[in-house]
Length: 365
Image (tube, rainbow, N blue to C red; front, side, top):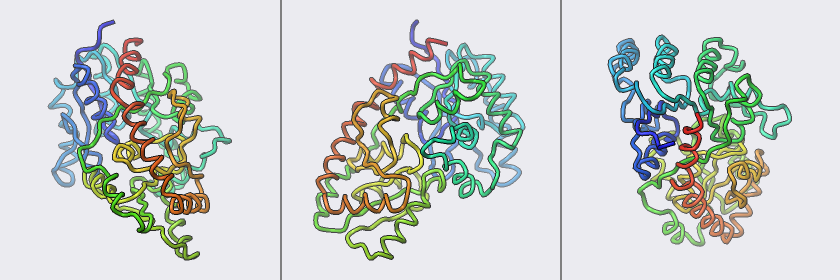
């Protein structure tokens, strides 16, 4: 089957659809990204669904914008939705039904409501605490979001409309396989990636020989990324008077600023509750920064990768501190993982490795 000519990438989180759009362009395939700037990150979209108006005017504008721009949302060869929360709640479900009806092929990525997906993780999963921790710290609630009927209905509506559900992490695949939509789940796809255009961190790190090990953790979603563990690690380092390690939690900031700031560090602590990884890890690796996280060989094998470029840390405070001490005492480990990370991004996540997966999956619908 020939490659699709018109692709609508509906929704934007973590820059995934923007990255995919850039990668598709290298294959001569045009796509149209619709989404919101995702709060503090300031992400881009060809059509923004956000409003700059305040209060009730902004909410009304958000509800009206998709209707006014309906001609830009219909009649695509492929529509891929990244989450059920695309539009204002008043029109969301109706818009999803309309768009799917007027598209040749409709699919979704298994992202969106993490508490919905993680509620299906098996009880013996090594990071099963992510759901309550994420809910407690990020959403400020004690009960899982799946208790909210509207959220559940919209999430399941999206999966019901989708011919294929594409997981981007092994956890998402395992979760969906346990739902009524398990027969629709494809294999795990690799994250498409395009390198940021900023100063490479390698040259800056070489100028800091003999200085304390500087490690950053980007605050995004507190419970989701295991920021509590990083906070406790900072306290432990001070309590035990461990020298030569500077562990810093960065405040939330736009993506461009974040990438500039982390270039001043020696390594990055990414999420500590998932076996998989996301875009923050790939950004850092592409700049030559080693990434500390809980990424497992099992998760990498799911996407056909046999060599783990991550500095593994167990999801606990003492384990993280021990890893930092090891890196402080052996800068050679930093350099090894720096080179492994660069190669990992350049090969595993290049357009030649990521685009064919999506084209093959879309063609199978």
